[in-house]
Amino acid sequence: LLERLRADKELQQKELAQRDALLERQRAEQAQLQAEQERQRANKLAEQLRALGINPDAIDD
Image (cartoon, rainbow, N blue to C red; front, side, top):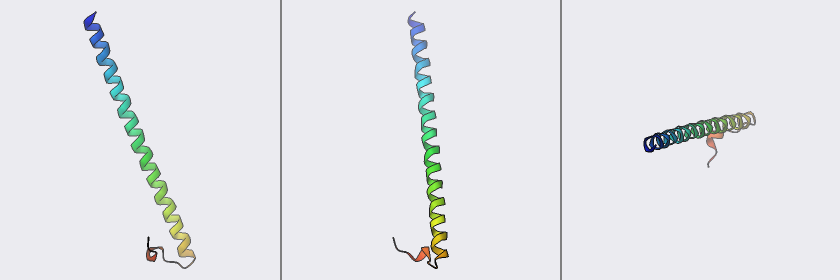
């Protein structure tokens, strides 16, 4: 019985570790997606500024 309890505990720990790893991967993917969306938005805004004759690279932060 004690051996079975230990095995169950080990299995639970492995499952938790797998879930944690999956959540971390999902967070990383979400961060990458958000960064890509921000880059696309910045590029679109830069195009709009250029269309207005404004050089976006010359604008100070």
